[in-house]
Length: 193
Image (tube, rainbow, N blue to C red; front, side):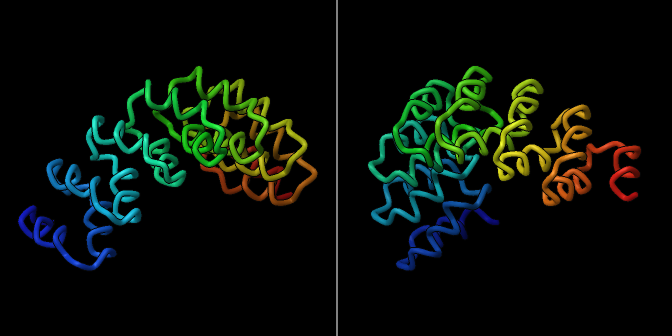
């Protein structure tokens, strides 16, 4: 999108138009910085989730009182590691889940969040494409099928884990293994038989 057109749209009185500009990866840094100050939380949330948003703006938005805003910052791959570390310690599970889902999060945070008391946070780790193999292997043994579903659908899950999940008692887990692009042909053949 043409930057001059984005500038024009960013000044719209319609919050949803400004929100669309905030989400647009082509929006110039100056506009994202301005939209981060918008009075509408939906617009600021778009900035928080935009990977083109500069680190200093994400750091500022990480202090927003709105939990969903901080969760957006937590999921953003451009958020600095020190901000992710702070957000991983929040009491709000949605914020911790955002860090858990962030493929750019430091591995020590992913390992820590894999043991979180809240299932949605652990599920965030289970679907994280950067989660370490041993963490995914441990989560694949969880009694909760939702968590095993997330591991089964993770294209970064190791072959050994996918092979084990192909024998899962839950049909939805097996179905996700079958749909995983990393599942070897021999496992797919066994699932089809």
